[in-house]
Structures are given as C-alpha cells and as structure tokens.
Length: 473
Picture 1 (cartoon, rainbow, N blue to C red):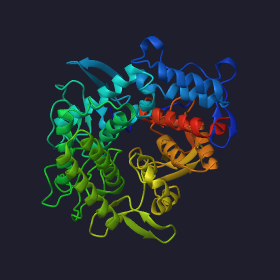
Picture 2 (cartoon, helix red, strand yellow):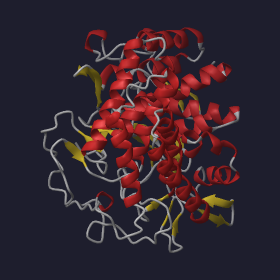
Picture 3 (cartoon, rainbow, N blue to C red):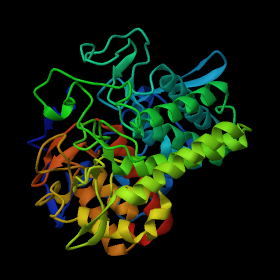
C-alpha cells in the first residue's frame, strides 16, 4: 500500500462547534464522543495495566474530548497491531505499523515504548514487549540494512524489483540509521525497567556486533560500502542517485544514512539527527554489553560512540544569522548543509525527546526555535493548526507527530497547552491521530490507521497528566 494515499473525510455527522483556535468538539448530546475503539472481542491484546491508566485519566481530567481521544489512541497498538506468541519457549511479537502489513523496526519500537512503565504491573505486557525485542534481534540478523520486515519469512515484497539485495521476508530495504537505533533503545528501556536480561542472549550479542559493523561500513572511510538502492518510481525521494549510492560524502567519522525516518532519501547522507541518535544508542548498547560481561564488544561500541560524537561536534553545527549556532539537518563533509526539519523522529526537534541531555543544550534550543519557524521550509500554519511536515506527503500537510514531539519537549505551560489544543482539533472527527492533515482542513488527512502517531499522542497526554494535570482541565 502506498503510504502517500490520501483518506479524506469531507462530511462528518453532527455539527462542529469551535471552542478555541485549533480545537473542535464533534457531535452533540449522547453521541458527542461515539464509540470508535475496536470492540473488546476483536482486540489483539488487552493489558489490565493499560486499561487502568485509561480509566484513571478518563475519570479525572476535565477535558472529556482529550480523555476520549486518549482512550482510543493510547491502546491502539495493542488493540490492532500486535501478533504475540511463544516460539521455541521464547516470546515473539510481530507489530505492524497500521494499514501496512509489515513491521518497521522504528515504528514497532516506538509503538510499544510508552507501555514500558507498566510492565511490572502486567506480566503479559512484559512478555509481549520482550517478544518485540526478540523479533528485532531476528530482523537485524536477517539484514541490518532493511527497515521493514514480514512475519512470514517466505513472503515476497511488492518492492521485490528494487535494485538492492532483497530477500524474501523483507518488506523494504531502505538503509536508515534509526532502524538500528530504535531496537537498542527499546532493549535498553526494557532492561532498565524490568531487570530482565533474557532478551540479551547470544543472538542479541551477534546482532549488536552486526550493528557496529554496519555503522562502521557506513562511515565510508574505505569506499562506499556494500549498500546500494534504486527503485523504478516517479517519486524522486523513493530512490538514490548515482548508481544507488547517493550523493558523495567526505568521510569525517559520521555515519551515512541513505534514507530519513520518513523513508525518504536524504539529500546529504550525513543525516545529523540520526547520528546523534546513534551516539545515544551506542551508549546504551555499551551499558548493556558491560552488564552482560561482553567487555571487548562494549569497548568497540564506546570507541565508535566517541568517534561519531567528535565528528558531530566538528561538522553538525552551522551559524544562522537569525538564531545563532544551530544544528544542520544534513551535511556532506565538503561544507554543504541542509537547513530544515522533518516531522519524523529522529528529527532535530526530536533530539530533546530521544536524548534527555539535549534539553539544556544551547545549540539545540536555538535549533528548536529555527525548526518551529517559517525559516524551516517544512513548517506550516493554517486554520487547522501549525507544525512540521515534510516531503513525504507533500506541502501544506502537518504531521500530528511533530505537534506531540513539540509538546513533549516543551518546558512552558503555554506551549504545552497549545500543542494539546492543536492535537484535540486535528483528529478530523475520528478520535484518532493520522499521519498528516492539511493545514487548513483536518478532515483531509493521510492514513486513518497509523499506530505510531496514536501511541505518541497517548504518551504525550499521559506525560502531561503525570506532570501538569491542571493543563488537562
């Protein structure tokens, strides 16, 4: 299925009443907030701990539309996208992204991430997430350059004719640094939350060795490396130029990422947000490897982390006449850089989400101002909201994900409240988040079923509830 396909709701039952800028109340009377969550008997997985959180928030916060949306969105991954089982005595969990029957390493990690704090209350939820970690290990070992996989290892992809080293069982083979970072983040979060090391087995160790090997190959110190990709397509962002190796880079210690987390091709392969993410992931990997007694591999991860970090300090910052020193989105080592941000995470805005230490980083704070302004070519403002989009679905389309990330990384109540209002107003009467919506009409949106956006919205609301519940009145 083409992720760019538009799903439009032009007509909605019930009168829409404007409450405030970017907010709308849908329906009236007893049908104001209709039952849109999938019925209990059709849900793929039900967690008592998740249901308890939903019940608590819906009972205690004053904003009943947000409470309704939270009850729809927060459990959406569990309700509709997980396929959990035991394989050879070990948990195995396949997680689709929503309306595409494939498991993205990035999306699946992010989709279950907010449930980690509830694992101690719910042993079955803990087992499900352990299964995701195990499935990630299996995927990485199959092909560390692939971004999305099938449960059926013999299934042949619709992209089987891509000019790359495709195998059965792989949905898509777009090399993105974050595809290897997100599984590390999830494994580390699971390990820290539960203390369970059963997922950090010999297969996981081999996968981590392969991550390090792949990162080093894509530093491109000695040639272009083994990865290449071309697709016969009308979309320029869906393929790589120059025989599938992308535009040239000058080796400087940074890792090349040929695609962004939007699955769009990079312009300059030194993709800055993902390199920062790699630094954080290598630190987490090092911690887990040391805990498991794998000192030699841990030292290799530490050395690579330091090298990438030094390269970022040397190459990722540019001076902007309006904002001062900011981080570029992409660089190439020759002095060229791309100033923009995209809604998909890792993003420049999302660095404050993925790397807690960034919250006080002066360059990040300058960058945050830049990406949330019209100096970012993919920042849009209209009657339905304001936020960051990207090339993936075209101009004038805002991704709710960017609004949620803005809210999660915000430090003042006015900005957090603004993000809550915009998210409340952008669901197009469905009660769910979408991939993107038109800046002037939230009923014109892409992807009615996009679990990552739903879960991230739930993560944001839950965070506000725990830290600033008075903002949810």
